[in-house]
Figure 1 (cartoon, rainbow, N blue to C red):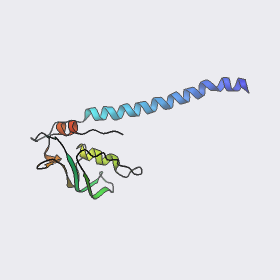
Figure 2: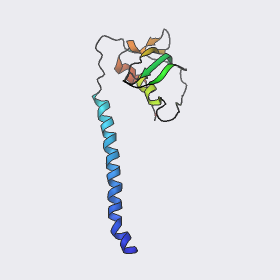
Figure 3: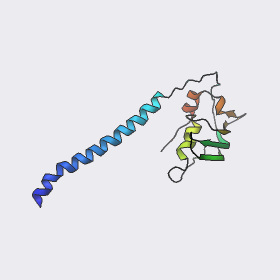
Figure 4: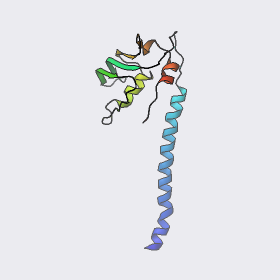
Length: 138
């Protein structure tokens, strides 16, 4: 029995290392995809200026191409300085909300605002300034 365990141990470790390698490669692919996303806009946009910000999703709808709606007339208000946890089951749209806020995706309808005095629709804001103003912990 002991000899069998000693013979099988290297194969077990090899399988574990292969799994770890595959997960690392998938993570690296996601990071490389993010690095390739352009932050320049095709038209002139104003720089987002945030001193204290309120985030407002107003009747936001979104669906991935050829898929059902992930969000349908979604509304959310996050007050300045408020810490907000977004929880839900897999596929509920948690990551999609953040990607919409950072403008990796555009909503199919509705608006997303960052409001502090007069309100700025992020659709009219420079991508780089949006992404510098928002932080995420996952």
